[in-house]
Length: 320
Image 1 (cartoon, rainbow, N blue to C red):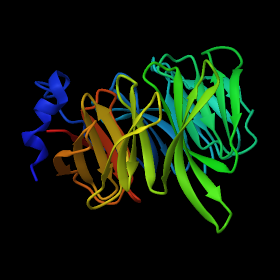
Image 2 (tube, rainbow, N blue to C red):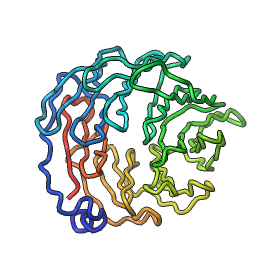
Image 3 (cartoon, rainbow, N blue to C red):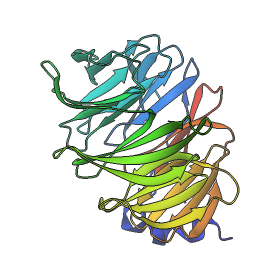
């Protein structure tokens, strides 16, 4: 198998070619890190630790600039607005906050959920904020000032939400769920549904795969990839399966779609680069770390921020 360094400059195109920026220094945080989120301009990293502190770090200096909020959080959540002006956070209960990134001032508070919020995702145009608990998805029209307007809600039947992902143009929302089956015996599977937000229509993909960990859109919005124990490419318009590939060694947990390539990362640090529409392996490498607990690609797709289980340190790795 070929190493990544011999393939990636050509695969990833001009966005990465010739870009030799200095790798950010490690970020040393007082508590164990639970969530990571890059700012849209690639300059700051928001993290939530196990005590619920939401902190902003400057990636160039490695210094903490401010602490926006602290709460008791069972599932710490943090999501930047596309313009980088605001951060959405959620707590142990059904509450959702939107805060100014520069000051921490609360500009929106929403309590429409009946259960703990598990996922947040801001649409690329910044017009809608999607939030999901175990049994419902809410679409809010947030502004930096004023109250939230509920754009739409959707109740889930016999299933629990696992992941949200907006299409690049912000018109469709992909929802990864775990479906529970009680007859003839207790079991579950995972499936992906695509919500046409403007029309209120749904497209269900017949994934029926228990091992899906992530779902990502192609940059042009024509395809969706589901990754985990297998990697599958689907038509976002029809829901038909395009291609499927079995993971050779370990289950992929995070995916990033860049150009014609799909970059997969597992918890043990294995990284694979696939041709997106054929799911054939083009290159592989290993991130210098094992037992990754959280990971996030920078918006420009060149730098990975990650932490290992139980670690207080955020490390960075760049594609060769």
